[in-house]
Image: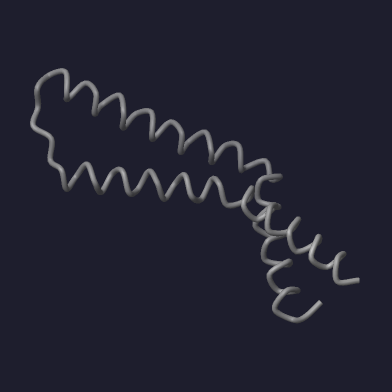
Length: 92
């Protein structure tokens, strides 16, 4: 295994391990609550006929997508680790 692959494997393992900490579920819950609150407020504003500030909406949607990307990171890292392990086994 070359140095770059080794470093990728270590990084992926560290990121994947985040999901196994007690705080991960808490973090995911807090972030989900924030998203739920956003959508509840946004839908209420729409029902009241309030004007939508597109820039503000785009910013909020970007923030939510960033949160989702963070929450997907450990699963993505696990996939990378499996791929690297398979490549390593095939090279042996």
